[in-house]
Image 1 (cartoon, rainbow, N blue to C red):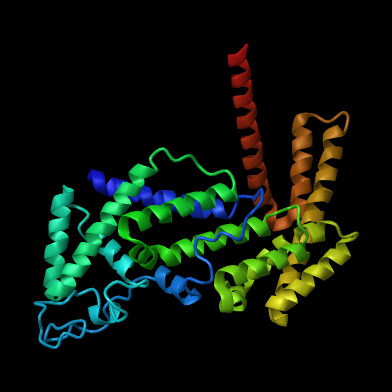
Image 2: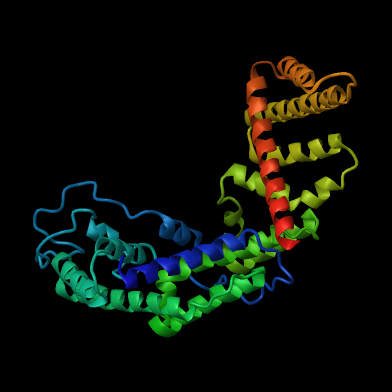
Length: 369
């Protein structure tokens, strides 16, 4: 693979790392007053959704006259067989929803070029064969700026150290966008990357609140509300409806984890969980979830009973190892029935893992002696 292509892939990997970190890092003191993209920027939930969707492929044959983007004179010699270019760029040649994705399509399409110069030459020829001359020039000039910036970005962060807090991850995300703004100009950088950066920033900040084990649910809810208003303005309420119900329910459990762990009885805990479920699911789904809960509890009780009986067998005096093994196998058949073989396989995996850990510990101990 050519060197410049490797560099672009590396930049994408670093950005993905930031996104993952945003969901696992805990804050020291998350400052929500200095957003990269707050509610004053014209980036809506719709923009985030559309920026992350795939480019719509051509559903109908290309137009017979070869015209695109409203060009009724047929200035273009052909159309792109993969896309309806008129629809793809209906919001303008440089837009927040399709331009960056189209650039990445071109980058992939000409990934086998051997030099950056050859790559740009192929892109230029391609664009001028698919767009009227003035439009092709705009796209080509912008593509050059975009690709060069992303390669320079990799050089800028080649000595990047992984962030260890939410604040550090946000700081790196800010530096990346500031770098793009300096190289590409603020308008172009925000137009191409704004929706993605804002989505990452929001994910980082929200995850920091949700995962803060020092806060009770009410305080988390309050901070999330402030975050929604600060970043999404009039769409603050809509952002809560954006994830699917199951993900929202799982997050609710995490938000109230400290409250749930502090309840005095399992019955009180289950009652609280049921109120959460009623907020997200219809009655039939709640019944299914409760049935699963019962199955899990029954399985846990069955395994607990088995473990106690197994311990007694292992302690029985006068039994050989073979006799103990046979009695344990009979106990497994009696306790787990048709699932006994599955249980034995799981036990073998666990025992094998424990043996491997023990072996490695012994080797490590031997090396230090």
